[in-house]
Image (cartoon, rainbow, N blue to C red; front, side, top):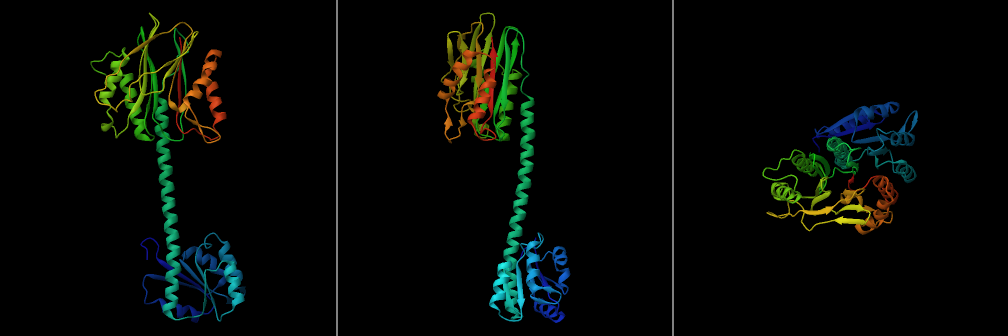
Length: 386
């Protein structure tokens, strides 16, 4: 019946003649294995060792109540699911009803014609073997899922190991908060001094989830960190993003694309140059208010030969820049609705004006708002204090 699970019949009966009769019935079916247990006290141990696909059990045996044995077989974890066919010398509706109530699968007046015995054995074994195969498939799937989860966790730890250390002092300080979602997502950010006069800051978010998204995020971040853009001035955001778009077209990246906000700060003239390719606007908080640093360019990889422009803005002393992914505001609330970007901006404006650790306060607010153990997307935010 099954290459993995052969049909195996266990007969529990104190009469040797019955055991021999059933054995003879099954001689012509070489795919059926047979075991005879004449001692009901050894029935459970024999069943656990033999692992039958169907049990035939007599109801009338010395030293033990047959119905009590049915109860024992159904209580034991090694036999509780095995089809159990009780054998009786005659039709007794009350006994039959009690046997079924205790968990018997079938009832036969012993012994019917060989064809009927074999048919019932095959019928009950077929259902039980299907259960075993299903359970085995579930176990294999669960093991694969555990292996995949372990791989994803290792990949997530690797991605997090690439994130830069905070810059706690100097003319510009930088810190961040990154909380990964339940899945391996595609957020990546970084910052570094290109030279003493230019600080680069970027955050990108690859479409989708999984190892593929994470690898693309790491690849793009490595290009920026290593300034691997030949013929491009890394200090000019527009051409940088234009080159990234040429390098990472989605038809060469398994149909994946990414949004990115890329900025370069020049302390000498307190100017911030930036380019936004489909990313949520960065927020620049100054004494005059909060400005959204948006742009009209599409995500990187979506439009071939796209030319992105560079925009600039003055950065007064005491300004704060927040660069973030959509995971900080696309948060499922307790009522099932999504927190939207306008609501996020409405919340963050007074928080920026209040000063202090606005990023940590935002995270605490989001955790109170979202009842789930983990967010559906990465929470990524970089704060730059000028």
